[in-house]
Each structure stands twice: as C-alpha cells, then as structure tokens.
Image 1 (tube, rainbow, N blue to C red):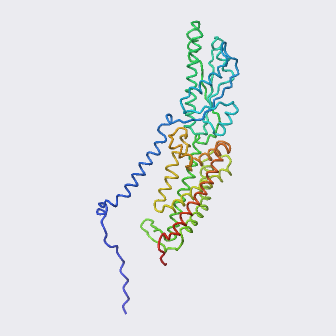
Image 2: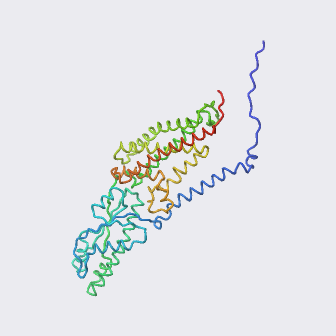
Image 3: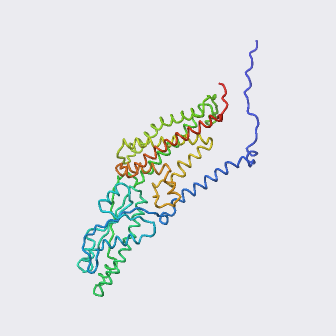
Length: 429
C-alpha cells in the first residue's frame, strides 16, 4: 500500500508590491503627521528652554551678606558695607535677581540646603580697608567674596557667580569715582590707578560637594535614569503582558506568533501590569544603584534613603505609564513620552535653573515629575537629605503621583469595561 504523500507546504499569496504601497498617500499620512509634530514639538521644547538663560532670569535667589563692622567714613552716617549692599539691591534690574540680605550663618545655611545659588559677602573690615587705601596707608585692595554653590548645578552656580560679579564690578566703579574725586590731585599715578578700581573679588566654594558628583550634574543624570527606567520598564511590561495574554502579536525577527486570547477585563489587565511594575522596579532601581554607586563610584551619602526614594520614584513613573497606556491605548506610549520625558526634561530645573527659563517652563515645573524627583535626589546627594532642600516636596509629589496613577488608570479601565468596550473578542485555544 502506497504511503500518503505529505501535504504541500503553503506559500504566501502574491500581494501588493512595495512600490505600489509607497504610492498610497493615505499610508503616509498618519506617520508623517505624527513624526512631524513630534520633531517640531521636541525641538521647540528642548531648545526653547536653554537658549536665553541670561535674558530669562526671574528672581534668581542669591544671598547678600553685609558683615562690615567698620565705622562710617567722615561725613557719612553708614559704613560702606551698608551703603554697598543697599546699592546692589536697589540697582538690580527688575525681577531678575532676588537678593536675600542674610547674616553669614544664614547664608551658609541656605547654601547648604540649596535655597540660594550663591552669595556675595562684604567682609567685616571692608570700610576700614577702604579708609586705609584712601589715606595711602595700604597697597592692598579691599576684597569682596563670591561664594558658589556647585550642588545647584554648574550653570546655576555660574549664573549666580556672574550676577554677583557684575554687582561687585559696578560697586567698585562707583566707589572708585568717589575715592578718585576725594583724593584730589595729591595721589601718585599708581595710587590713582588703584583708587579708580579699588575692590578686588575672590571666589570660594560656599557649599562643597563630592569630587565624584559630576560638578553638580550627577543628581540630574541619576534622576534621568530613574525616570527612564520607570518609563521603559512600564512600556516593556505593557507590551509583554498584552502579548502573553493574546491581545498583541509577538514578532521577533522572522518569527511571528499570536497566543490564544485570555478573556480578562481591562481593569484586571491593568492590575497585572501595575503589580509587575511594582515587582520589577525593585530590580531596575537596584541595578541602577549597583552601576552608579557600586561600579562607577558616584558620591552617594544616605544610601538607604536614596534606595527607598529611587524605588518609589521609578515605581510612580511606571504606574503613570501603565495608567496612560490603559486610558489612551495605541498612542499611550507617545502620550507618556511627552508627559515623562519631552515636557519633563526642559522643566526639570536640574541643568538650567527654573529661574533662568521662560515662564512656560516654570509653570510646567510646578507639576512635572522630573522637577520634583530631581529636587529630591539633589537634596539626598548634596544637601544632607534636608527636608527644606526639596526632599519634603519630592515625597509629597511622589505620593500625589502614585495616587493619581491608580485613580486615573483604574477609573478609565473600569469605565471602558462598564461600557462594554472590550479590547478583543476572546477566541478559544
């Protein structure tokens, strides 16, 4: 008896050619519109926040310390330190700078808690040194000190240093005119040159940070890692669960498959995704800390607190991604990208201070997650985990974000379930 021949191997049916498909303008329409909008918006958002920090200054907080204890010069009621500090505050352009008149101890406290970007210090012997210079009894210029705060980021500290330097230079010019006029013609050429620009300026670090802190940028990049880990893991989990439950195709290289659909409600699916997000956030944050702190040696005090904060921050971002995907479906990943990345980066205040960006970004910074998380990480890494350095606000905003993700996500999922808007008609295995 002859054996049965094997069934013929199916061959793909002839379909449309690539050329004919490319000529279909409708096939181009949606990708072209979305790609163009994304490129345009990203360009405007990212570049719009960094191009004009000097002209966008708005109440940049800088400490002004008048420690001058010298007696006033003849014919004057106040010493030069009091006069100089008043002139600096009154001459500040508009709302650009917020000079905070503090004592030396208060200035150091605000530098150490990240509440000011720098400080301009008038020393205790300022009036006495000017008097000695005017009388020809000294050949050393009176000195003002600029204190920097590298923990606030290299650009923020540099802006404060630039503003303070300009104020000191203008003070030196005004004081030089007065001293030159009062000296008459009795001063020698070298003395007149010294009197014309009498104030020297020195720069010191007001609140030092570790040498392995990226000049104050490690907080930003560490925060970015937490946000990206939460964002990417959330989308990976979203796609993986949909594939595993048969609601999306699996395609790896030339291999394509689709599992039998598991009948499950949207709310239950979201619960599974959020549960996996909570579990895998332990792994991702642990690996981030192993890489950055353990392998690369990033300066990281308060390790237990940093670990807890990192987990909660990344988890909240991941839950937010799941909620947005549940609400918006196919375009959810694009919406989440704008919420957690595109709008968050330029409004984070971690590289360019919010006091040096246009008003639009300052408004975004009130609620955008990266702004809150960066402040918390910065407080832990640079400012001894002080609550008023931004850590307390960061915890509050994490709690709000956590609750908002749960409420929004499950509200939308249950609404779709009640409306009978099932994702797909289940099919048997």
